[in-house]
Length: 445
Image 1 (cartoon, rainbow, N blue to C red):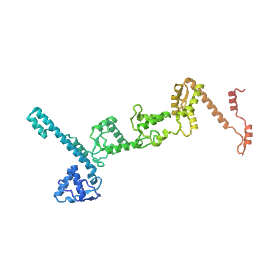
Image 2 (cartoon, rainbow, N blue to C red):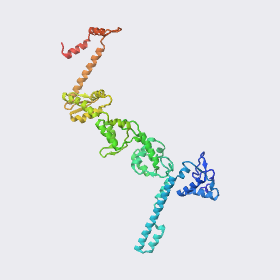
Image 3 (cartoon, one colour):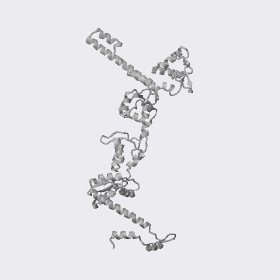
Image 4 (tube, rainbow, N blue to C red):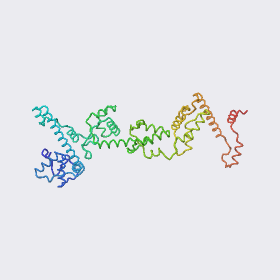
């Protein structure tokens, strides 16, 4: 107060923020501004400012008090919207008190009629014996003015004084995860809360402590957290919180992933969405371009491609009893439809759904080779034998190719045309090892 602090100077100190000093910020004073401040102080019931003005008035220097014209002082203090809210709140509080008094009077009259006892009549008429008013309003006011927001570390944020505690496990969990992720000043202020390795213990501790936040601060903090952790469910690149998917969009993507046998995207979607209850269990994101490309209304459906091109191939495999590698099927499809991308897991998913128990899968001896699909009626020994025979043929082919590459046509350091190359080929003698191999293979004596 001015009376208790003689260092207050009406011409040098802001009447609104004293004793906090703002060096370098211009002080001003006008008749209209002083009137608005007095009116706002009365509405706000701000005893500090009213006492300043009263003491200055007693000293005859009321017209000289100054203030800062900025967002923290004058502009916020006399904001019409905030003052109107305070007027409405005060009016509702007064009407509530009147209703409470009328209720007490009715109760008192009933007691008088029933009992007719003088002591009850005296007690009902004595205001000191009535039920004390709820202290929630006083408590909220104390919180607004005394306790700082855990996020912005200020009493007031954008004109907002009201603060709230963490009441639910979900809000506390999300806030703790955001603070741990950012590892910022908010995380430091939660040092006495985040003392356990168990997230559940930390949540219980956060809810039990007197920790408060502005709604605006919490909303912006969590939105910033979502922008940093959000990943597109399709391309797995970062995206902002505006790309959040609704239930209908998730259902469309899930249906498309099943049609195209894209089990990777389907699994990511099911991690965020309960398909049975149509309930989003965790925020799910997708870029607009990724979503539209994935749904791809103008592109031939993958299921039709698989049925028309893979189906006959596997049917022939089942009839004649041989096996195929998924990578060979994939390469064939990729060569036919260059504008699309195929994966081994898509082919396996299609074969499992389309052929069911008619086919089986196994991994070859070499870990880097793709899965093998073969008719289910073949035994494991038969499949192993076929794989070994194929490996022998591949090895023989590699040896033949290497032997042919070593053949000398006698054309070094010479220019030749088609006829010269034909004459050289006729004069060339094949290696004895190749002649022996083909003689044994074709049973030629």
